[in-house]
Length: 120
Image (cartoon, rainbow, N blue to C red; front, side, top):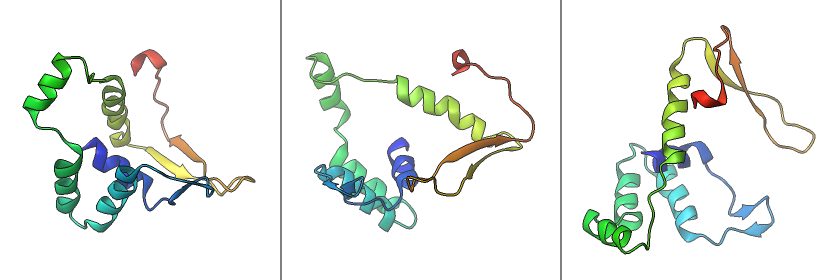
């Protein structure tokens, strides 16, 4: 689900980093296309399962011999942050392009939510 959401957020990005250096990660470009071209998400998830997932028994073996490591920090942080998207009065607004041509997102809350880094 995080993979699907990531490529929904990234949208139809360029084939080049910062418009210059070609992206040489085929799975990254194919993931973009799979999510973009899948209206219901079913085809994108099939692409993910077929191309980017190992069967559980292979994952267990690879983990056991130390060839892969499961990193949960980013996933856990995203899960905790996603709850804020559902808070009433909290939304992300896009500002006009900056002088450098990049969009800036701004978090806007009608009622302040006290939070510290430790809460994440």
